[in-house]
Image (cartoon, rainbow, N blue to C red):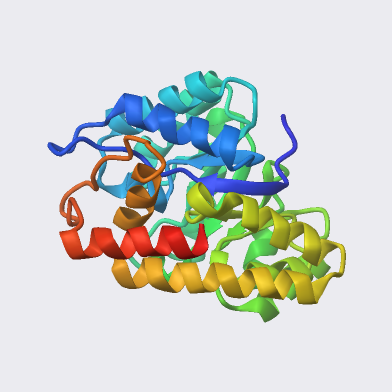
Length: 292
């Protein structure tokens, strides 16, 4: 298994206007992340990849393309989580066979699952695949909030190596790192990376790293080195960019910024809005000229 610390892009996926996967564009996005953004790894199949609107076969195709393009140049994490446990297991087996360095799985959502059911979900995926697992905690989208005792119970399975922590509860983050120093934590909110790194996270996984990966690494490294004023100046720039991207439409604007680099970043998958308006495209051009 490769080193899983550092800067990981939550991989964007290029779709054609009819919603099919644009393999050429996806490969270009992967190469951009490796060659230009210099990321340590890719988090494939997450929210940023519009994963929860895709069929099982489409998810597999994205895993296959990402592994084929990246080879062994960087670390790869496969997000296989699903409300359908059988699908999660099937995807986990497939990604493991492809050689992904670890699996990750979002906490099962929509239904109000008990913690015992959530633990069974993770234990089952691990038992069926034999791969390592990163818990994907994103309470503001899933409605699943877990405390330190519950994380401790999940960590009793030696294959659970850590958590992608996409939450604003930095007290919980600090408590987790202190209580379980041997388990990894990846910061999931790009706009709060500096405070997360100052609390000892081991890496960061972010959608904006597809376009802002160089600056993200600078924030990460400067904060680790205790150069907080320099890191904060870069976090301010990053958050100005993020504020503009969010206001203009997150995934479509990130794809437009990649298009401005000559990449076939494509469209979004319906029922998301598939493409930007002319006005939104102008905003994206302004964001690129100003911040990138």
